[in-house]
Structure formats: structure tokens, C-alpha cells
Image 1 (cartoon, rainbow, N blue to C red):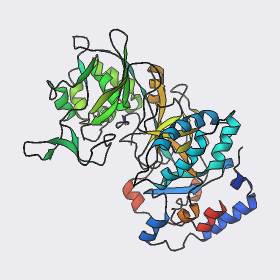
Image 2 (tube, helix red, strand yellow):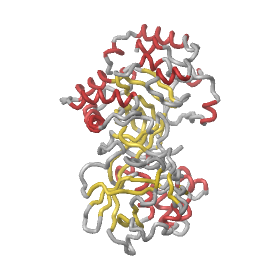
Image 3 (cartoon, one colour):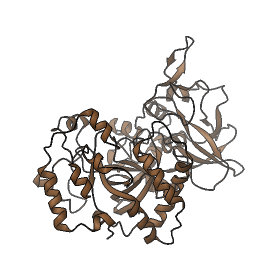
Image 4 (cartoon, rainbow, N blue to C red):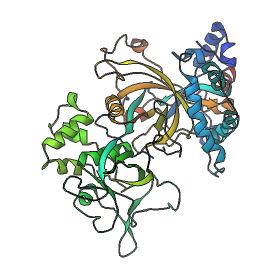
Length: 472
């Protein structure tokens, strides 16, 4: 499970399916006309909405699209995407049905049953599998057209089993006195639960902050897994949620997120910018490291502004495979994403964006089908994702550059009754005439998403007529 990522670089980044391909352009235009003419239909009651809507995604708008509407959909490597999806399916297939299991997760089980037995021979076959088993739906926060993308990776750092003048920064396992109210087993809750420790009266009180832990609040409890050289190495490990520590004898110690101290993450990069210590245009993970190395006396006070602290567990002693995501499967470089926990693990998302993958000076087209296999406490919202780029310095450089808008298309299993769901689906907000076209180049001004307060103040939500979904 991913901890909250560093917002200094993330922040607050011609196929046709069977159903879509048969619709001629005139019919599609007529359906859209009916859609907008019917927009003022009175919404169903709240109780009826809860019963009829199998998705139940708060503050979210969903717009059905056709496979042919997805730019470069046919050019993607669907064989690689299907292999990643099948890894998720093995976990979904073995997991027991939960009482609170969502509609999408239940429907994904049925798709996974077919996926596990599928032996695709080429990308075209894999593409047909997705088109036959899913429907594409463009997803965004209510009133917005784009989501946000960032990147993460697995750091590889030098470490030691024992402390010494070179390796003196401890990496801690979960403390025995750390508790999360209501949590008894399974993954430690990433957010939404009271986390702390019990005092002498048995009451829950806040756990030690980062500054207290760095000052030695956990000393003597034998919680140290290993030691690393640099305070920033630990900070970066905690931001990324996993690490590969190479010990003195060359043994790779694989570490994964295990728990947190209950505080919300605060961006160190933002603190440096607000205090005029690093210019905004220069901000990056590498720039944070350079500043901390150059200012060792002031660096602890900057780190203390982020009270959150992450604890790790050992997951292996080898260089094989990538780290395990929150779903419990090894992540796949360039195909796995961390998403908000409102989404079911294993859900495919087609991401459309322009990202600086090759270098920081130019952006290249990025259109790729990716699978939700991880989560993070700062990955919040229906169209918000952290893209996994692999391990090591090269992957870190790519991940550190990504802080960009992107468009999200969620693939919904065909097992879901989308006619019933469509009665409650919010419509996208109408665009002013002056904003109908897309920017022709990256230099044009982009309208930033409005605040949550402004979104709530907008006009009442309109909804899709059920006949639109049935035609789709």
C-alpha cells in the first residue's frame, strides 16, 4: 500500500466494440440530442439512487464513450495489459466474497473467471478480450474534464544491518503500541481510521510525530530493520512506499509499506517553496535532496513540517520481481497504477496524456491501458493515479518529472446493469463556447480545476436518461 506521495512533484499529473461499432454517426448524433434535451428530467430520490446505482462513486461524473473515441486505443500493447490484468485476477479469483463487496468488484470476478483461462496469442486477441468484456466510460471529478497523474518507483539504496558513522538513519518496522481503531487484521488502514497509541488510561492519543521519532522517541524498542546513509533516503522510501536496500554483503532487502503514524502528509517541496528556499520552477525530488545535503542543520525543521511517518516490513531477500502493491500482486512497470480506494483493485483504466517520459524538456503522447493494483493516502479522487515506473535511478527520474493532467477512461464490466446505473449518473458540466476546443499546443493556458467549494456551488447535477445507456 502506498503512503502519501510527495506533492512537491505531484500535488494538489481505430478499434470498435461490438455495440459501439454498429452505431452509425447519425444515430449517435440523435442519441446525443435526446440526451441534452432530456437533461432536465427530475432526479430520482436519494434512496432510489442508492439502490439503482451500482457504482456509487461520490462527486463523480461518468460519460459513456465508444472504443473508437479513444485516441491510439488500437495501437496500445493490449497483450501486456492483459498479462497485468490476469495477475490481478488471480487474487480476485481466490479472495472470498466480502459482505460489503462493491458491484464493480463482483462483476470483475466474472470477467476474471474468463481471463484466467484465456491464453492470448497476440495483442489483437487481447484487445478483443477487453472490448468484449468491458464498456469504456470517461470518468472525472464532477464538473472537471481532466484528472491528475503523478509517478512513483522503487528506490534502490545502500544500507547496513548495524548502525555506524556512515549508516546512521534507522528504518523502522511497525511499533507494537501503534493502533488503528477498528482494525484487527489485514492491511493497515491507509486513511479514514483513528490511528494513535493508548495512554495509561487506555485512551487513544496521537502517535509520535516525525520530529519526535527522528529525535529518538522509538529508541530502545528494537524496531530498527536496517540503517541507511541519508535522511532523504528514508523520506524518499516513505514517499514511494517501498524500497530495495542493498546491505553490506550485497544482500537485497526488500521493504514495503506496513503502517503509518496517523498524520496527514505535508509536502516537503511545498514548504521549501513557501519559505522561498527553492524556486517553484526548480522543484523536484533531486532538488530537495540537494537542498537537504547543503543545509543539514535546517533540514530537520523542514522535514518536521511533515508530521507523517511510515513504517515498513520485510517482503523478500532478492532482486526478483517488482514490489507488491496494495492488492497483493507484484507491480508491473508501466502498467500498474495506484488509485483512490473508491475504485476496485483490478479495474482497467485507459490513460490519455502528454508526459515528459524521455526528458524534462518535452512531453510525448501517452495512451496506455493500465490496471489499478495499488493505493495511496494522497491518491484521492475518481480521476487520480500514480503511475508505477519500476526500480532504480532511471525510473526515479521519470517518476519525478510526472505531475501532469490526464484523461481517464474506466473500463466497466459488461455484467453491470448500466441502464439502471445510468438513471443516476451525473452529466458532465456543459462547456462554455469559448472552451469547446482543446489547446493546440502545450504553451496555451490551461484552466485549473476549481476548488471543492466552487464545485459544490454549481447548478444542480443533471443525469443521463436510461435510454442513452441502453443504446450505448
